[in-house]
Length: 447
Image (cartoon, rainbow, N blue to C red; front, side):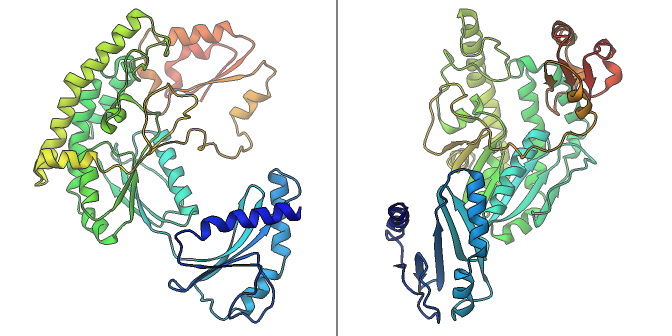
């Protein structure tokens, strides 16, 4: 155990001594402290006037329960409290915090100031997209950042609520021209989601978001954002014009987050190829997955060429028009905007995604959004209480309104439910009155 303990201390100290303007003391009394107690590691930064005390605990057993017991035992240890009470150099802005990593428990004295100010951009176009962004925001708050929200609504009079950990919120209402246009577009998207790019829906969406971006860029709140002097911008922002505007307001870093896996448009913005021979394009519903036959590859190639030769130039033109309105040299500014991404964070698991080219600043966090399990509530709890072989959830997200599904789509869902009578189904729909053909089945519950 002693050898393991010494090895951990030695490994911890190695990176501390490289490139750090600090003094590192091991198993020595804290300077300017009346106590003779010897913490495991002491870091002293005279320039920043920062003192860090690390006291290491190595649980005998591995696992979460062992770490919890070690944490409680460390709280009862008075060594750090005695050192803190007799230390003459501590200020009121310094507090005691605890960190836990595998085989290590450390109580550390750290500066209580925020690590930086973050502006988190959130569009309300989908529940899963909002929750993904908010979860990342909560991670940043937990890590010591001060996070402010800028919320861009997609529907008028939309009621949205956010966690209290975000100290400031800016709300941007939708453009007047989009108040009626956007709901109609969402309805059409649901009915034709199996040909999102080639049907013209994507192009219509881009022209709709152009008006929203114009409203956003001209909003009075921009001046207040500029005065806040944010250190980082985080968000699922598709518009290069919006990204460049915020970066030129003095925000030095931008992290692009996506609630989706890496897709064709994002890869193209990053300059990465998406070989159509083995990478099916999302939103075109190639049912074969990556095991494409000749006809599947032909359709995929057609979609890729359609995007590259027809859609992308129109998207770029919309953005360059906005950049000209903002007073930029459009061609130069467009290149600058594409170079403004510092990190890409996708809600996917690299082991489960399709094989594709990637770069060093792409991060996959799929699965990290999983919350702690909670007790089931009604009506879901009663479904699980029924005797069955299991429960199957059918949901197509908040954007896809079930009443807008193609007429050929719902019968296929009903056929699946009828083929599995020993299973219970929870079918998330918009208007239950419009789905009487499914409601009659004894093993189906609408939510």
